Image 1: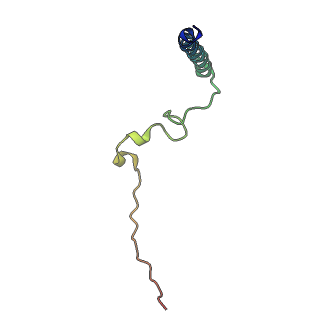
Image 2: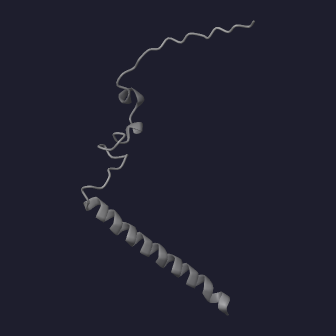
Image 3: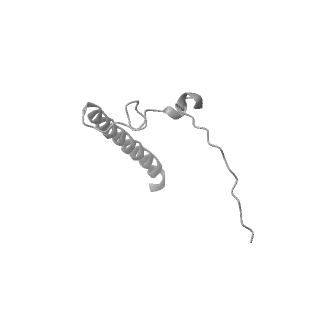
Amino acid sequence: MIDEGIVPFLSLSTLLAVAVLALVSKERTKDRMRDPNAPVSTLAVDGKFGGVAFLRPLNERLRVVRRVELVPLQRDDA
């Protein structure tokens, strides 16, 4: 008798917990968006890494390309 009611109870309580967590997270996000002193995301264009630069093609990301000559190492097999 108890087993028949536990699955709906657990599913509804889980659904309620997720809904409450989503609403709390939404309010925290809105509060942070309103705060001008909040740290900027690293994915933002004005962030630490200049946005999502990794999504641009490689030739657009590279500003300066240096050519480096590779010289093989000499080994002393003495």
